Length: 143
Image (cartoon, rainbow, N blue to C red; front, top):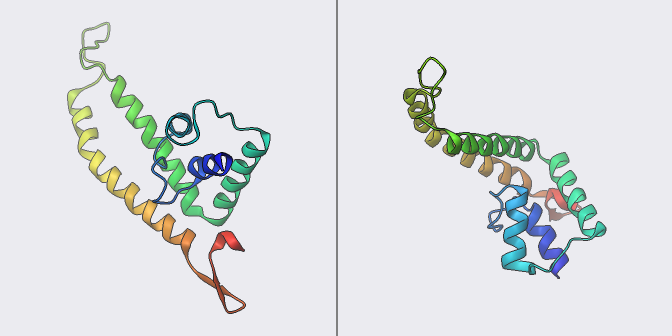
């Protein structure tokens, strides 16, 4: 059960996954601390299952790939904004980072967040789209 829980929480893009917005390292740590126990170590089979699950999601949904790329870029933006030191100066005494540029970045964060939320919703709808096969409803991961 710990293996299945670990796999699902590491990969699942669904709303039911509270760790979906964390990067892989943070996600791994939170899952260890709160779900499977800090003594848990994923074996080769679990790692293979994670790779397979991710491959299926990538193959089934361009929205999933786009969302992951967008989230990665957003994390880089967060790291950048966390490292900005407005008191840092060039050799000639000018600010390395202009306050106006940082202020503009902060104004755009609401738009970025809104776009990420819309992209996540579109991706989720794409993944759970119900299809019919042999008069039975199936989702794309069951094909």
